[in-house]
Image 1 (cartoon, rainbow, N blue to C red):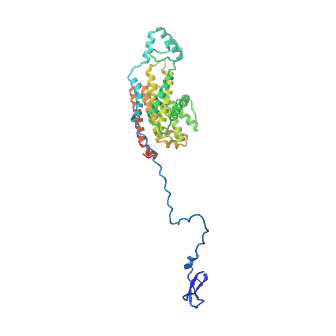
Image 2 (image 1 turned 180 degrees about the vertical axis):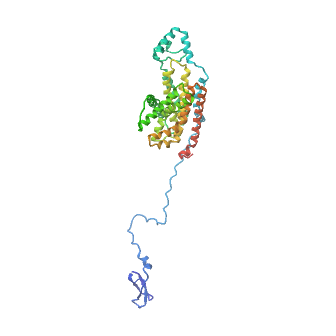
Length: 420
């Protein structure tokens, strides 16, 4: 109810229904106007007093509470400077090509040594001729040779010394990586695990694919199912192997065969640990990914050296071929996979985005395509006895790896959002 004051000083309470009207003063009967409702609205909106509380009064709504100050984390201590010998020591991996350089300019004719052996011993020549006529096994022919080998060969055909060469090669290369290359967030145990995996399980998977590709050549399937598509992919790989190894094929056809047969299968085999990692966790930084790639290539190269020694070198070749195989060839396998590893780290999101089985082909060719081509060119040049071309290809491979690694290393902070 609004309170009305008359000119005579009398105060009276007027009902709300008289708002805006004239009413007589009960004291002097003079007309007094009752204020309108909106004029008295404000007094009617007085709030009830709050109950006593121990909590402090809240800040007015129009006053913003000050934001709490964020603690500034202390800057990490600066990384110790990398010794100069480590900065440039990585390039020493290229020195592993020196045995290949020497072998290109040396003469080692196995056929000539074999024919001289037979010419100097007619009885042995007759015995060997009889064994060859009845298609005797290779072991029987070597058993007939003096000391189980061709004159000039480093070891007998039945020797197992190549396992010692493999152990020395693996230890030297992995020790070099641990000593000279930046580890990133990889570990020494991880490097050994990657190398052993590729040199054992990876090689077994590769051999299984090669056997399947070989047996698929005389088979045909019809239909449009996934199994049929995969079968013809394997069949194409088998055809590529045949094109690569056929001595009658020219340089171009041989290189195409090596690219989509040997090159694709071997480079994909060496990438398996990294593909698995970047598909699942993707925690490796660039340095760690490169070390994994080099270690995987070393494991593959050492395992391949064991196979070649047992099947093609023991009892036949001089010591030079073992040096080339367990040093230069191991380094090349590491270099080719190191190049692919840099690209895989750079384009790891492509691997993580794959959602179909056929979605793997383009990313793998994108990552390993250059290494496949260099690998194929090197093998084709050796097949066609163009040793100088093979040597140039090896040198270009090493230079390309270091160039790409250093270039992506400079871009790593921007790509990862890290600060200098």
